[in-house]
Image (cartoon, rainbow, N blue to C red; front, side, top):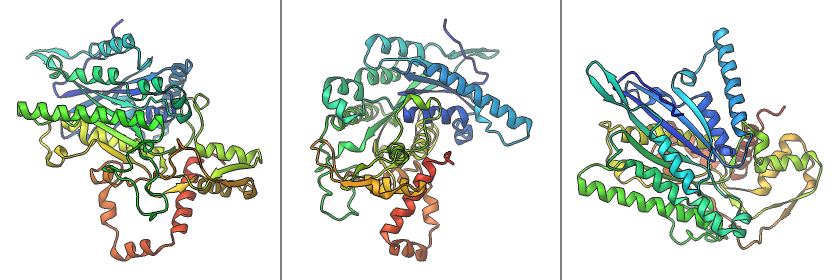
Length: 446
């Protein structure tokens, strides 16, 4: 049965957030954030009178996920009610801005699933509202947050065809972007935020060189993946870049300013607390593995030559939130904002943390936190040909465009403070960063 949602105002907008890979580690954190906090309506209050959100969480294999989401929502509703009863501060977004949450089993590479899904999301929201003055058309903005992936390098090597189909789902992307065609564009628009990986870099050019030299988005020499996983994600980026180029060309020919529809985020290893909705349905993070080895008092080898710019999962969520509220929604809503820089904005961004770390560094930080025996940590070197060694990234481009950070906070640092930071011992910086990271990841652990 078709579900109809109606709004009350000609300035109302529905934002339909579609999460692929919703049952995965990042997917659960994003869905939890949206259910608990919502995206603040105040962030675009100067554009429309009201914005309402629909959420569709797509999953593939975790059959118990729908029940877990429903229990999570009930739990959050009880918490909200308890806070209201006790006059505590409550987020106004949770119950007021979210119209509904749908959990749906979905196969990214099944043509029938894709066709049925796109049909549903472009017909299940009422877009014509009768009023005394006539019929009003309500705008629906569809934002796909693509987090589904075949991310195990080993599995990708064993089944490269399936890895390519899942990691670069061109048929699914094409169908989503087709929503922007002439027939539907005045009612529906669509955008894609796709998670890529730091493994699009080869990890070779940094070896034996200045440790301050990091990969940047415009890298040419080192943009040469050494494994199937990185290659399939690079192909996804190339697809999105080509689509973005077509959008720009079509806009030039029609004298219409291009909307920024597409984003690819080259993510490093994500670290954070356990998956919040169904923790037993996903693998823990690398730090969870380290902690388990300490608890079991088992000797374990950790690489000392494999470097990454690991990133906190809450930082990833903030970046996604900022892309939606600061760029996608204003562009789709045709607000009179200054878009001079937007025309030249890249769609591919590095998304990593501020410090390059190796596996042994992270293991030591976990052992320090819980008082485990350091003698259990055995150093070794990564020698696999399909494992990039140092793919540390420079991620300041995100902050340049206002995603995931406030530039004004950096501007407030005095010259004296900056000099002190530059003079601080690098090892101390690393230790401090890792201490804070481990504290965040295990914040719920006594």
